[in-house]
Image (cartoon, rainbow over the protein chains, first blue to last red):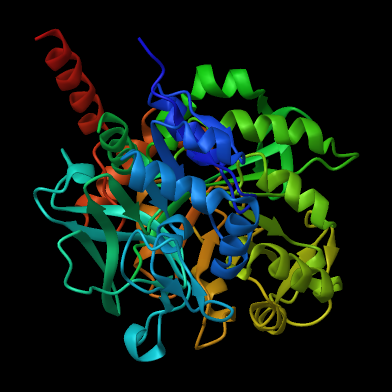
Length: 208
Length: 274
């Protein structure tokens, strides 16, 4: 069988170890790279990340990874899965550490949870929480309509009424937990830290 | 509101995993032994978080600990916190690059507030778990202890808990040395030492011997998570059954169905034959 060349983009932010373990557990043998040339040849991309939006975007631009990602996803139609900061970077722009343009694959901005939004809850939003998904969402296939996933984040996307908004979660206010449109997939939670719920989701992405 | 958590803690000492009773250590076995005799993968699918502490009392071999951490984290799809003797950013970095998502610190909480701030700036506050070991002294008062429970910190425990809470840590791991490894249940009075308006998550540890103890801990509104390090009391499917009984009893723990992944896999295999 031909290796499907799943590429995990390593731009030096956050823990990619657990993403790799989860993919390997599912029988996938991902390529880890920070080289735009490698990224361009991918059949599928995983964009993980934890940390600052601005710092991450600056790195992606500086290394040319931003163009490589857009080339693969927009021109070559390959699939991409953004995880946590990875999802946020796919947004239109982020306000963390000053306004910064994102990759623009998801036309929604990324802002910090406001105190009005969270009420008695805390920032960051940490821990397992219930995610409600649409029945036809590909990456939630075989999972119940409400399933628990692990979150660690202070910034979020809110609904903009788009068809790609396939799952939501409530932390004081309802925010976007997952986005899925054509070859573009993104989750605000960490599937690699969400037991078999997360493994199933990753498996669905790989099977796409 | 995030769900409550059930945490399993593994204690590592120079290549061996240990049982602890009142902080006295007893050897259980190495990582192979853990995998074959304790079916660690079953344990890891029954918990919400894993804590791995290097409790080696003499010279620590961080490289060897990191290797053990990597092996453990390979089949464990929940957040992992690791610690033991962390005094430098590079030490924390090594653990975070071996599968850990968070680091656990103890002694520097009392002596080196600057270092806690440095850790938080480097990795984020949510990445720092403050482990506070508490033991009662002769007059019954609660005191914090450091250096693996060997040195008493002057002043009331409540004062230190509040002070640590106000530093750049993400959560508090509150451990009773008196109950540690006894299986007699958590010391719930320990929770009275917490600030009234506790702004950070609290993990209660020390003393759990059965599912009822875990349930009692989780039933307290001040407790966000309960931890147990008792390998013997939760062997085989002990933790799995404890988890099931907690969920059946209405405790708000995350839910997943291990069978679903298996079924999904089978369904796909069948589909590929057709």
